[in-house]
Amino acid sequence: MVRKLPRKDVVIIGLGWTGSIMAYELADAGLDVVAIERGPWRNTATDFPPGYAADELRFRIRHELFLRPEQTTFTFRNKMSQTALPIRSWGAFMPPNGVGGGGVHWNAETWRFLPSDFKLRTHLTERYGASFLPGDMTIQDWGVTYDDLEPRYDRFEYLCGTSGQAGNIKGKIIDGGNPFEGPRSRPYPNPPQDQPFSHTLFAKAARNLGYKPFPQPSGNMSRAYQNPFGVRLGPCSYCGFCEWFGCGNYSKASPQTTILPALIRKPNFSARDNSEVVRINLDGTGKRATGVTFVDTDGNDWEQPADLVVLSAFTIFNVQLLLLSGIGKPYDPAANTGVIGRNFSHQTVSDVVSFFDPAKFVFNPFIASGAIGMCIDEFNGDNFDHGPHGFVGGGYMGQVQTNGRPIETTPVPPGTPLWGAQWKKAVKENYLSALKPGTGVHGSMYSYRDVYVDLDPTYKDRLGRPLARITMDFHDNEIKQNKFLTDKFAEIFQAMGARQVQKQPRKPPYDVTKYQTTHLCGGAIMGTDPSTSAVNRYLQTWDVPNLFVLGASAFPQNAGYNPTGTVAALAYWAADAIREKYLRNPGQLING
View 1 (tube, rainbow, N blue to C red):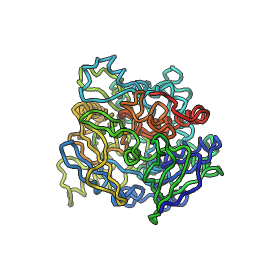
View 2 (view 1 turned 30 degrees about the vertical axis):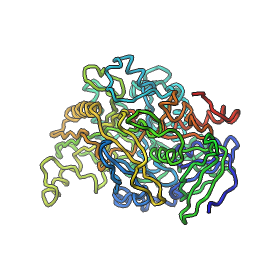
View 3 (view 1 turned 90 degrees about the horizontal axis):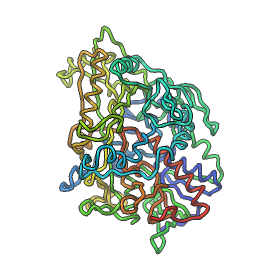
View 4 (view 1 turned 180 degrees about the vertical axis):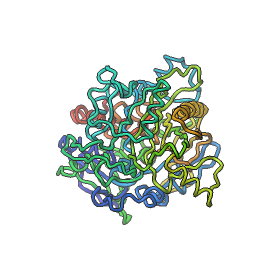
């Protein structure tokens, strides 16, 4: 029996960054808002006190903050001809779980995409010609521009107290910042973080090679900060326990430390945690959402009626829920028709491990934060001429070593035994003098006809619903791109004086067991054509006008940056459209 709850103006599915932003904006507009979150409620003071939060075994190795595969998982295969099997242990990515979502455990790297990223197919076709692109590549323009999103990027950065050095303010290039970034309206709210020795040494070598290094934009506070909501954050202590961890020092921007304290004070906002939405309900026409059905931890089914539904879960869960709810036409790769599940993507990241003379170099890698480093952008996006290289796309690269935690930070030279006395000796000798960036090369992954998400025909979850099935493999374009970037990256470490440089480029096939990032993108993409996109430029579904779908699922392809800044900017963009347009005249904002 399904129990029916009182109607709300808005129901939001997922309470991470996008859900929190949308909830605040719509509650601020006077609407009665409820958010439903699959995982538990998380508070900084009670869940991440400094006394025990910095536990590498608990949080990094045993994945305390993430969804457990036994709760739900996905099936995976590289090729359409293969049989997909369930993922039993997370590897390539880590699905978040709980209030705050991925914003709790992220590194806090806060990037803006390049202006050309938003009109990618048009840009690349105009510069290189349509024949330069692989025939099965399905990249497309977003339907929004950098100029549309710039004020929203700015709002997110000031919400978070982002630490950084602007490189382009209103078209004026600023020394020390990223000269390739799009024009920004004002500087970062905080100066960049102090950089450790290895990072400054990398920057010096990069300059000597003709590059223009800049500090990575960081949601780790370089100084005490009070955001526009009056929420206060403290300066980072460089403890090296950011990614995979919550911050008990109130030094890392997260929903808990920036927006939730203001949101929960609004009397017209409420939240239900430990409750999983299983379906978006539609009326008899199939053209209007009437609310959602969710199940609690006791197995009870509940119906939450609402006039407006906002889907803001993790990327692949957005896609799965749309498919399970019968919203939008499922993507068929053979016929190349349909939109739900189309243009799925991840990233192509790689590392270079460098070994220096221990008698001359002491890097102290444990002095770090989640988004600390010196980077270059010469090989990102289309910042360089791809014509001679035979591929498109790129990425930023930098010395961004974010920790020296003892379980996972044990770089040893090639040829060292995998265990025993010689291994221990090599770890001891190299711990302070080896550099192993967490994500040294952060490359784009463009979309292809045969990379997608659908519902698995065999495997089901604990509630009897089909699991989401991922079909994904690397294509030659991404492999060429990553090798090129990794080679360029290695040259900088050689210029730093490394005595040995070990390249670790990404190689096919796509390995679901080897961690890259949690930046899955696409599957419910935005655009201007209903036949090739699931949502319009305001993230409103073409088929159900009172349903908006937020998050990286809207990305038509993935750029060479972390997606969080763009995810948040799009949330503000969609919230403004709802407040300024939809609420005045509910219905389809754009006729497809």
